[in-house]
Length: 123
Image (cartoon, rainbow, N blue to C red; front, side, top):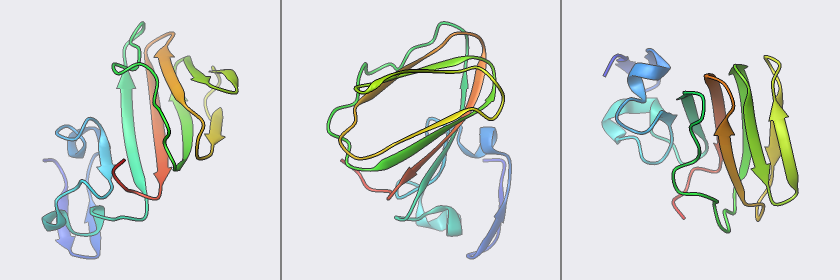
């Protein structure tokens, strides 16, 4: 792990390094409580680095009952929702969807995205 738990209420690190063992997730219920403030049931945050052509490995999500925001840092990323398809191509483009909307995705070019999902709970 690259980060430093300074105290239970304060942490600094690198998202790519800190998320390396949790598929990019740096905050959420699945982070070990020994990681301090990163372990939370309120929100999940993911740093996603995706090479061109990569697709969501499990296909479509089903019946997720959380709200999600996907924010493009760089690249061109295509998000497929049961409500339609969105291309995130300009830095800062984002999409937000609520409970019950299934999704899948693909990286059109090498892409970096930040995903924020709340609340943090296993399905």
